Amino acid sequence: MRVLNFRDEVIGGIARKMGFDPTADLPPDLAATYVTFINSWLRKLWSRLDWPESVLIEQRTPASHYIPWAQTSQNVIDRAFKVFLVDPRAVDAPSDVPFRLDSGGVFCGFEHGTNVWLKYLPEPPFFTTAVWSATVTYAKYAGTADKTLSVVYDPVTGWNYQSLQATNLNHAITDGAWWSQLAFPADNGDLIVHGAYADALREDGQTDKALAEEQALIGELEHKIASRILAPYDPLTDQAVPAARYRAPGLQTAATK
Image (cartoon, rainbow, N blue to C red; front, side, top):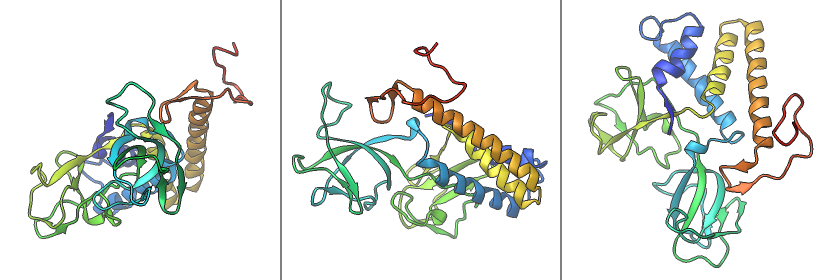
């Protein structure tokens, strides 16, 4: 998975655009504000774009033929793409089954066994500039609704770390049994920085520049969506994509040249 260093390439990118040195003169309260913008744009764009490198395939145990959206100690499901009766990474044959989505989660039908394998996009990651404290008891990251007490920031390395266990007290972030690095996905990371930078400009009173940055974001977003529509293959659903009825202006594929 391609990742971005949170300090150097994400919050640092916004800070430098705003005229700050992220390693020297970025005030902590302003850094925390930028992180709020970053998390907000991650949530806005997460379900609207393809994040192939963040898609997971996991074994799940249905309850009453459902995989709930949120299960204890499991990643929360943001988008479900396929349900398999056997691990698709271990067999070379179609094994996916029809499913439907509703308030109960992912309905797997009635033909499955004890376990199924779900191909899905987890909820967007959460980031912070709050540094680790030996006096704070941290919660387990997976399945935790409030991530503020399950993620910490290391200003030395520039990475965020997620707590792997509940009641995580006074365990250093270098202890791999208790913490793991929380990576910022490079997929579409430029759009997140664009959006957060626009919010930072607006917060600074630079409304015109914020609008211009949002227009640039919209242009990039439209290009990504157009590329997705014209793509012959969907990496998330493993399906061929039907030819688009309407083609985006100014874009051509090999079939139209």
